[in-house]
Length: 328
Ligand code: ADE
Ligand code: ZN
Image (cartoon, rainbow, N blue to C red; front, top):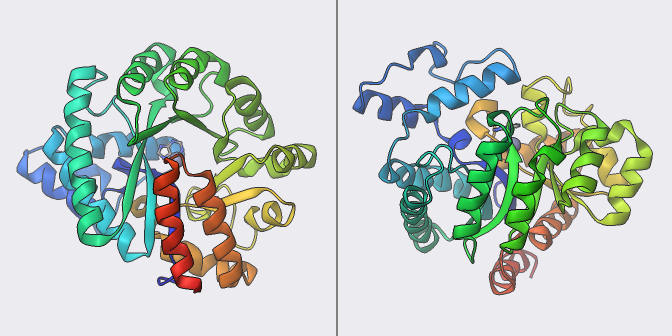
C-alpha cells in the first residue's frame, strides 16, 4: 500500500523524530538521555504517562531552530517514503523557544524553509497546527495561543491541544481556543484516547472543534457516534498508536472499522510513528489485513482527509490532483 497517495492529519513533529536522530543530537550536545532507549536503540517506555516523559526527554535535545529544520527534513523523508503527499504536523511553542513569540518566529521560519525544500525535492506538502499541552496547564496554554494567533496564516493553519487528557477539562482551555479561533485558525483537540465518550462530547461542545485527535472511545456511546456522523466531525484516528499504548488488544478489535461503517468521517494517521513502530504504509497494510479494506476504501479515506485538511483552497486543489492522478 506504499504507492497509494496518502494524507496525514495527526503527526507530532517531535514524536516523529527517529531515535537515531535524537541520539545523534544528544551526542553532539553531550546530553545524557541514554535511559530512554532500549538495547536495540528504540524508544523505551512503560505506558502512556511514561511515554509522555520519554517524549519530553527526547525533545530536550532539540534546542535550536537549526535542530528543528533538520528534524523537519528527517520526518518528511520518512513520510514521503510511505506515500504521504500532504501532512499536518503538531508544533509546540512550549518546546520551540519557551512560548516567547520572537523565539517561536525563528523556529517557525527554520521549519518552513525545511518544508519548502522537502516540497521541492520530495513533492510532499506540510502545514502546521500549533498545540498547547494539557498537563502544562491553562496559563501556559494562553501563551501558546498568543504565539499561534501571532503566526496564523497560510502555513500555521490550526490550533489544538495534546498531552495528558486526564488533566483538567476542555473548557479550562476555552480562552486559548477562542483566541486561536479569532485569529482564523481551525481547531482540533485530543480526546477520546484516554478519556471516555464524555471527553469527546466536551471537546466538541465546549471548544467547538471540527476535528478530534483520536476520538475512538466514542464507540462506547452509540448516540455520540451518531452525533459525530451527523455533525460531520472528523476523527484523526491513529490505530497503531492506540494498539501500541494498549488501548485495544489488536487491529481487528480496533473500532475504526465500526466507526467507518456507522458513517463517521474517519482518517488515518501515525501520531508518533517511531515510538509505535509504525509508518503510514504500515497503518494501511494492517488495516487492509484486519478489515479487508481495498484501495477504494483507502481512496475514500484520503479524500475525507483532504476535505478536512486545514490548508487553503488552492493547496487543497493542488493536492487533490495528486490523489486523482493515481485513479486516472
Ligand atoms: N503527544 C504526543 N502524542 C500524544 C498522544 N498520543 N496523546 C496525547 N498527547 C500526545
Ligand atoms: Zn496525538
